[in-house]
Each structure stands twice: as C-alpha cells, then as structure tokens.
Image (tube, rainbow, N blue to C red; front, top):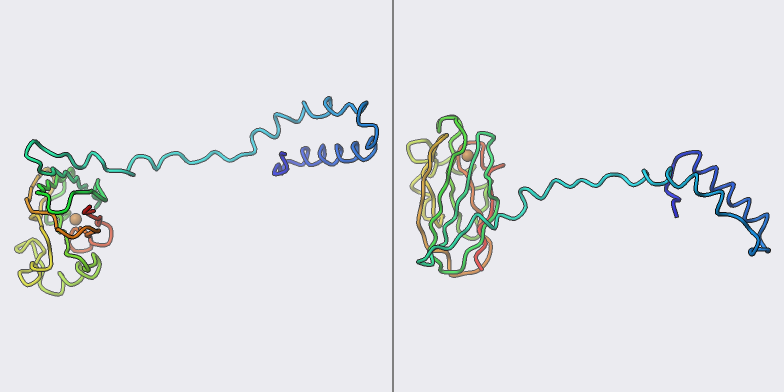
Length: 199
Ligand SMILES: [Cu+2]
C-alpha cells in the first residue's frame, strides 16, 4: 500500500478508509470502497524519491584496454588538471606484454600539476609509497621516483604536464591479483590511485 505517504490528506483518507471498513465490515458484498480511493491515487504517486542515475559514467573502464595484433595490451589512462585519472582500474593477463600510455588532458605545467603512473609491486600501498617518495628526495629531476625506490615498482612513466603524452612498456606480473598504481607527484597520491588487475 501507499502507507509511506506523509501527506496529511493521505493519512486522513487512510484513517477514513479504516473507519469505513470497520463500519461496513461484515457485508463486504455491498461495500462501495472504490469511489473513495480514485481521488487520492495521484497523491500517492509522487511519494517515491527520484533515484540517482549518474554513476554510470566512470564505472567500468573496459575501453581503457585494447589488445593489438601482436597481443600487446594497449592501456590508455587520461589525467586532468583536476588531479584525477580518467581510469581507475584496468585488467591484463598474467605475463602479457603491456604498453601503457598516459595522457595529460589538462593545460597546467608539470611543475604545477604533473602526473605520472607508477605501478607498484604487490604489497606496496599508494599513500605510504607516495609519502616515502617525498622523504627519499622525490623531485621533478627524478620524476618523483627516487632511484632507491625503483626496485619496488613494476613500471613507471615519466612525469608529464598538460598536453603531453608518455608511454611505458612492460610485462604484466605472472602472479594474478591486484596491483596499485599511483601518481607520485606531491599530494596527488591520495586522489590519483587505481589498480591494475592481473588475471
Ligand atoms: Cu598527478
């Protein structure tokens, strides 16, 4: 029923209907309840709240990966001046050759809004890794990936600014699972993260 209606008139008619039913009760055959309800029908209709229907846009990034004629997984990840990746997850096969292309779709310079993609080895976490980059001397000169930390990543791109594109080729790990990728620019590693799923 439309019991959820909070409109007072609806409540009243419900009460009235109850009273009516209680009164007529037994002789159900001759009870003429229909005429009472039709007037209230439209009032009950607007009750259900409109459901949000927007999260479809960023959900699956199936088009982030395409396999070329040589079997190489071509991965395209966009990035913006709003400090976001356009792809938060992509999937490749274990041991598959991968070419990952990072596109900076914004306009800001690398010194201001630089982005890279660093795919971390299993067990590494984006926030901890990004924080450590700062502590270990990350800078534009080393693409915010100090030499001493490079053995902890599967692959990484250089740091780019608005309008630039860069690519890196690597072989996906043999071990299936989820691998974190992150932008190691200062302050970006909280928002700019995603995962590479190896299946
Ligand atoms: Cu970034």
